[in-house]
Image (tube, rainbow, N blue to C red; front, side):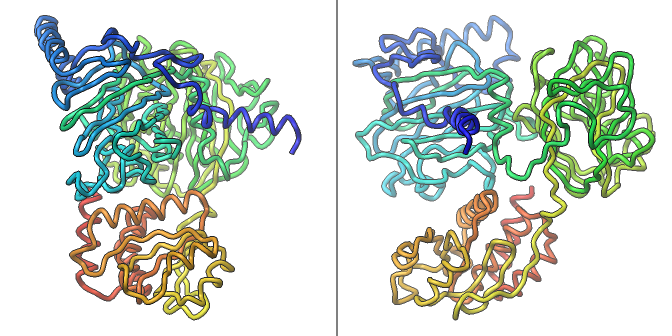
Amino acid sequence: MHLAKSLAVFMATLWMVLPSQAQENNQPPAGYTALFNGRDLDGWYGMNADPRKLAAMSAADRAAKHARDLEDVRQHWTVENGELVNDGHGVYLTTDKDYGDIELWIDYRTVPKADSGIYLRATPQVQIWDYTEAGGKWNIGADKGSGGLWNNNPGTPGKDPLVLADKPFGQWNRMRIVQVGARTSVWLNDKQVVDHAIMGNYWDRQQPLFRTGPVQLQTHGGEIRWRNLFIREISSDEANRILSRYHEDGFETIFNGRDFTGWEGPTNNYEAAQGVLMCKPGKGGTIYTTQEYGDFVARLEFKLPPGGNNGLAIRYPGKGDTAYGGMTELQVLDTEHRRYRTIDPRQAHGSAYGMVAAQRGYLRPTGDWNFQEVTVQGSTIRVELNGNVILDADLSTVSEFMGDRPHPGKDLAKGHFGFAGHSDPVQFRNVRIKSLDRERVARLEKAVLGSTRNVHRCGLLYLAGQPGKDDVEKLKEAGIDLVLDLRTPGEIDWDEPAVVQNAGIAYQRLPFRAPDTLTDEVFNAARQTLRAARDKNESVLVHCGSANRVGAVWLAYRVLDEGVAWSEALAEAKQVGLRTPGYVERAEAYIRHAQE
C-alpha cells in the first residue's frame, strides 16, 4: 500500500482507537471537556421528566420544578474522593448544557442489583445494569450485559449489546459513546457493544431523536459511582466523515469532481470544479446519470445557500418534471428560511415532493455541509439526514397528493438519478451510489456440507440439521465464519463448541427445544446475528437437529429483515425443515408484534 493511502487509512480510523488513553483523575485529554470537575456538582442540575412536557411549562412552573429537583440532588448525589456518587434514588443528574453530535467517555462502578444508564439528548438510554442471574433481570435482557440501547424497539439494531463486556462488581468499567445524529456506537471496556445503530426516540416513536439535549446519569436501584466524564463536540465535517465511512463497500463515485462525464441533460446550467457540482444562479433543469438504477443507496453531501432550492431526481425517466414523471423528487431545500414559511409540509427538505412529508429540524445551519443517505427499494424510499431518518415511506400506498395533482411516475421501477435545479447555487459533493439491483434477496437452494443432513443455502447463509464431528472440516472448506447452534447442551455426545472453535470457526449457541422456549429474545438474538453477518459479508451455518427449529428463526428473519412476503417465506421455511405448528405460530406472533 502506498504511504499516502496508508496515512489516509490511519487517520480515518484513529478516532476509533484513541479512547483507552489519557483518561484518568478527572483530567480531560486534549480536545475534551470535563463534565465533572472532581470536586462538586458545578455544571449539573436534576431532572427526571419528558423534556417536551418540561418545555411546555410556564417559566414560573419550570423554575419551581428546577428548585425542587436541585434539592433532590442534594439528598441523593454526593462527591467522594473525586467520584460522583448516587445512592440509587432521586432525580437524574443532568448537564446544564445541551449537546448534539458528541464523543463521550465515562467510567462507572456499580453494585449487585443496581440499574442505571446514560441518557443522550434527554432520551433513554445506554443501559447499565447487573448482568448476573442473581440480578433478577435476565428475563428482560440483562444476561447480554450493559451498553445496549435498551429502549429501542425489540429486534432493532443496538437494543442488545453485541457482546457481554461488563467487568465484575467492584471494578471500574470504561464506556465510550460516539453519537452522530441518532447513529450511536458504544464501546464498553474496549469492546464494541453497539455499532452505528439508530437510537430511537423513547418519548415519541414516530419522531427521530431530538437534535440536541443534555446528558443525564440515570439511576434506580443501587449505588453507582462515576468518574472521568469527558465530552467532545463533533464538528459537522467530522460527523459527515463518520457517516460516510460506515459500510462504504460497494459504493461507486458517480461525479468525478471535474466535469460531467457520465451525466446527461442541461449540464451547461451547472458547474463542476474542485470536487463540487453546483447549479448556476438563475439556471436549472434536471441533469441525470447516464446509467439507470432500480434499487439503490445514494450518499452525498450538499450545502444550501440562504433560501436555496434543488432536488434529487429519483428514477427519473430522462424527460419531463421528475417530481411527477419520475418516482419522485426528494426536496433539497433551506426549509426554515422565511421564504418558505407557508409551504405545504410535503415540500419541506427530504420530502417526496407533493406526496409524503419529511420530519423537519435536522438540517445543519445554512452554509454548512450536510450528509444525506437515500435508500430506494421497490416502492419504498428512506431518507437519512445527518444521521437522522426523516422519511421512511412506501409510495405505492400514497393516494392523496398536494393540489390533487397525481404523480403518474411514482410506480416506476427503474430510472436515472439526478439533480433538479431551481435557479439557486446549491452545491453537491462526494456523490456515490451503491446499486442494490445485483443484491436482491438471495434464493434458497439445496447444498452439501459433508454428511450434514438437510442442507440449504441462501447466499452466504447455510441452514441445516446437525453436522457430524467429521463434517466440521467441510464447514471450514466452505468458508463458514460462524456456526449458530440452536440445540440445547447435551443433545449430542461430542463437544461441538470446542471442535468448531479449534477449526478456526466462531461458535454461538441460542438454545431452545420447544415452541414455548422460542422466546422473543431468541428471535431478536438470532436476527441480530444474521444481520451482522450479512452486513460484514460473513458466512453462517444455522443448525439444530433436523432444521425444524432453524426454519422457525429463518422465517422471522426472512420476513422482517429481507422483506420476503409471509407466504413465500413460510414455504421456504418448510422447505428448510420447519414442520412443528407451534413454531409457525410463535414466528407469526413475533412477526406481527414486530411490525406493529
